[in-house]
Image (tube, rainbow, N blue to C red; front, side):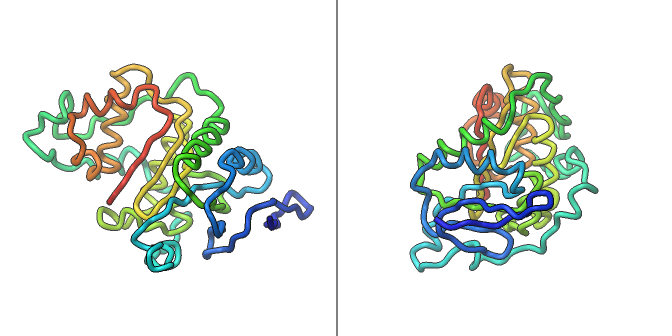
Length: 252
């Protein structure tokens, strides 16, 4: 066990962590987490450390050659300063695109983006949800622990210049702008960051199909490739979002 120093008000403090090293702006453990429930501790420490924990899943495309996508995949220029100038609704509207078929898969919505889902009126504390979801994900697959200096987990893709959506868009600030909007409206937090994957915890998922449909439309704009490869229509996709505390996105 080693420690990472961080600044707490006017004094220096330390955060106990497994053995690891910095990969530019993200610290990553050398080995997968051996105690998934320790994810709770790192979420709880964020208020003081300002180091948000993210799970780094394995990727066979890199591990076979003892490489690491954090070092061996090109990064985009960090764009944290550009997030605030972007509007999430405008971003998703621009990404809505044409339907992959005759449009029936998008019913009751049509050619235009239907707008953002309303903000949840009742939200649980998002931090315990993020801690629980992260611990479950870490228990299901051998993820390494990543720590990123960030006030908001939504900003991490832009801060790191994450290139997971490069085949779709190189606007990583826009990715973070949408994640900020989901943070505000649904209590979403980034808990997993892979080569081309994002995992979010959601403290206020939709509970009824009408609201879930609007959120499903947002998901479709955000990651159209994933929507186009799933077998159902938008309503069936939305049904799977009801009461679901984990949102996964993949641009593979």
